[in-house]
Image (cartoon, rainbow, N blue to C red):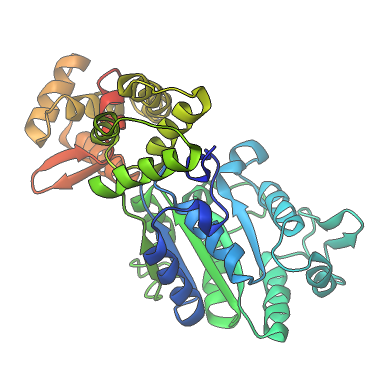
Length: 365
């Protein structure tokens, strides 16, 4: 199996295709940039892979939190601290040395099982924990990287004594010179809204940040990606088939890797239509989940997918399907939300999908 087609996030540069620019930008941001770096891009574009490869290669001590796992751990202080415990267990750098800096901190137990955080303790605060990590990094003379994957999920934190992550970031920004936060986000508008960097009432208002945007591959890059992976795996796929796949999947590395994985694992050329159908099925499941938030979401997505890209045509189509009048503000709110979660973009006066796979899936809503 080619490393390029491994369906899991990449952790080594040799498995990452053509992301030298992004890795260099992330390195500059961590070494010489602001305390906060945002790694942005649509779903399945490879944000997690870029960040993991950088962290592994840099050798900097770090802790990694996948905020999507709060769906299973709970959107609470307990859930966040559970993810932190897991992150410490896998921390870059020697856990024993990090643990020594945490020893003696109220609410923290350091033992044979690693670092345990007592989320119910009033005396344990996330800022106190970060202060110890900052001290650890300062003594080593290098940054400590806190990675939060899909950081927009932190906006759902709730419950007793909940963590206000924006305030934690602001405190770290002002006081902890050796910490670097790297946040990834697929729902770019939602992440911006959560951080509220332009909101005068936000604790993060006016703070500088570095942004690394992960772009989709161009057509030739996509062809090269597939052909390189097939060559590594010793599989021959006709050029015309590769081009057809690339035209269907539009440079999204996750979808291209899925096709490559299917071909290599089966040992035969797979029809482009078959893999597109599978990708559409995955996307449709996600869109149905999003559409459960609002009946109007599904109708708006379907309208745009069918070519009704202007406000007036979206409104007419959605009203026809719903059988009632839709208030302008409701439609405006839905469109704004769908742009924020990076499903749609607005170009001049028309809305369009950022990913053709999701466009095809939306036709079936």
